[in-house]
Amino acid sequence: MNKKQTKIKKHFVGPAGWSYPDWRGTFYPIKSNTKFDELSFIAQHFDVVEINSSYYHPPSREAARSWASRISGNKNFRFTAKLWQKFVQERSIFTNHDIENVQKALDTLMDKELLGALLIQFPQSFHNTIEGRSWLFRILSLFKMYPLVVEFRHNSWNVQQTLDMLKEMNSGFVNIDQPIIGNGLGFTENLTSTISYFRFHGKNEHMWFEETAGRDDRYNYTYKIEELNQFLKAIERKMDESRAIYIIFNNHFKGQALRNAFEFSYLLSGEKQDIPENLIKTYPELLTIRQPENPFQLELF
Image 1 (cartoon, one colour):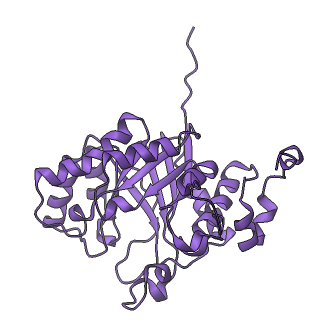
Image 2 (cartoon, one colour):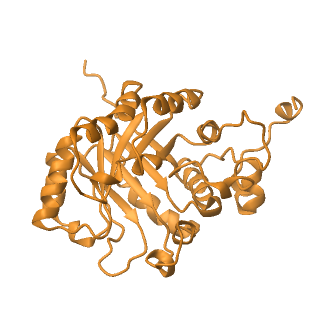
Image 3 (cartoon, helix red, strand yellow):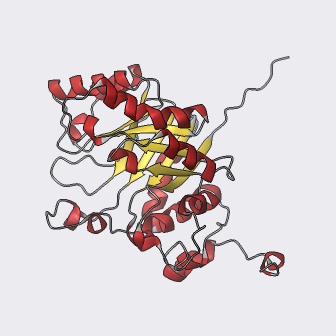
């Protein structure tokens, strides 16, 4: 008798990063004792977080072990991590020591089955040229032992040649939403590996390339439900072909990424969300999708 084969699909929705001062009082408690842990709090409410600090310097093994310990209460939790900027932004000379430094934390997370994807994020200045393709191939080859996904921001990469190359290298294409300025890449629905990866940066085009704008200004944007529903339709089209789907919100300013992540999780699952009180106070609209409070639990405090 033939056994019916079922494909396991898992969707991971969460924010890019977890350490933002303006999340204090917006999402995290305003005042807390020294034992309060932001990452553990994230893992209570989401199943994934994107590690941003790895872009600026390679994390240590000790840091990775600490992260793994702090999210241990959520057995479904996964990390994704950005590759060090030396390999994607600077694109300069690097050494074997540099590669080994990057691998320390990644190997630790891989060993614990916590690494969902290594995000190779290129800037809009990285174009589809002979030199660009050569560099891309080199980086994909260097880190092929990890689950790779590649984010392009220049539209020249959205061609069949790129998709074929990524498929051959078993690397995912990151579908992004960003302000479309010049030859910026618009939202796509490309799938080149068993991992689907979607990143939402917001649409604050007035500040995206403004020289005087800070990081918060660029990512100051809240997605409307109508916009999230359009993204949901695109993601649903990739479900059957994907082993895992990562949906990351990077519009972090004032917890807008958290708001949209909860809203998207609700749209995706139809289940009401465990939303902290501080975020409800900041965005009262979330009250309609919040889980009812448990009276028994309230009696415990």
